[in-house]
Image 1 (cartoon, rainbow, N blue to C red):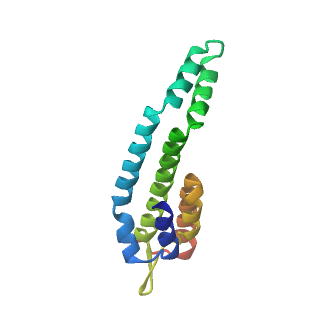
Image 2 (cartoon, helix red, strand yellow):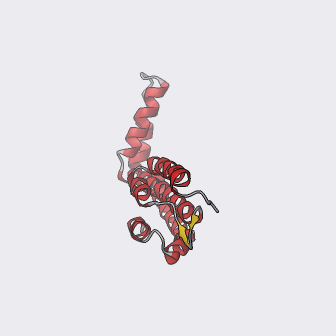
Image 3 (cartoon, helix red, strand yellow):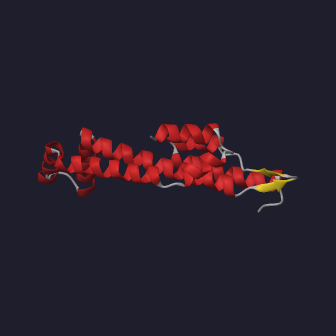
Length: 153
């Protein structure tokens, strides 16, 4: 459900229908339910409890080393890796949603046309590197409003 959302945002950055769909929070409710299910499965996993017990019983290492080992052991299980993956996808999509909506709302008038801040490149970055996409959008918006348009609504 994440990839089709990115596809329509990238393919149709100026569409009012896509903007209305993206402004809806339905996809985040679905991702939240999926995350809750994955987290529940992770908590029920015997592998997760075995990993935690093994790391906590090993008193030969320092606290930081044990914590890093615990996190890596957790992510080595399929259930916890799934919940972490859903978590990352949700956060990146949340950032992409902000970029898309901000690009649509923060526009300038050029003659009779509304000139939206370009967002395609930032959305592509958001797809895999959420914070870089957000930074790209901030720089693009600044350049757009400084050098391209001057009448910002």
